[in-house]
Image 1 (spheres, rainbow, N blue to C red):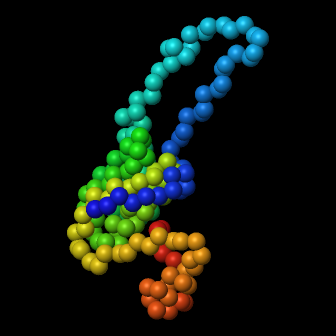
Image 2: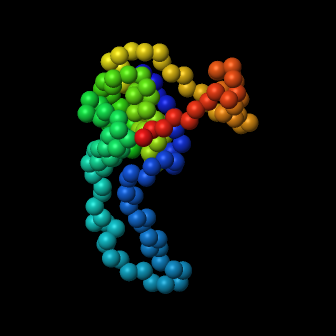
Image 3: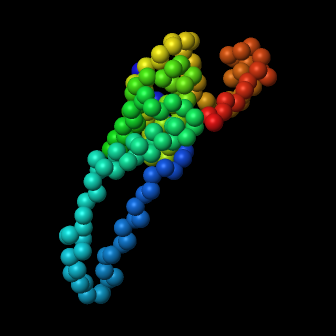
Length: 154
């Protein structure tokens, strides 16, 4: 169980963002007209928006061929955090689900609460630093600079 950080504005764009509110300040020297439009503007239903975001993330996980039927996904817009819980078959699936949840624009953190049905060796996470190459990382972990592979999420 852990919280993993991701780049907030990278990844799949699953959420439709509302159009920005136009700047309706009056021009200098121009008379202002009070329309009352801003006073009666409806506030968005944050709970409904968060539920829709969680559903979109869960559907995205399923679209990658990962089992989404036994997981729960919640999204907190204030903290840009996805919480994923439930049970997955193995450690590899767990890691792929967490990465999918974090590979969504507007998501900055993933709170991994997943349980693994068939526990295996836990994977290691590595934070890439400036100057790192796949060969350098492979040499460190595998002893051979050419022994790396690029995993596919599909």
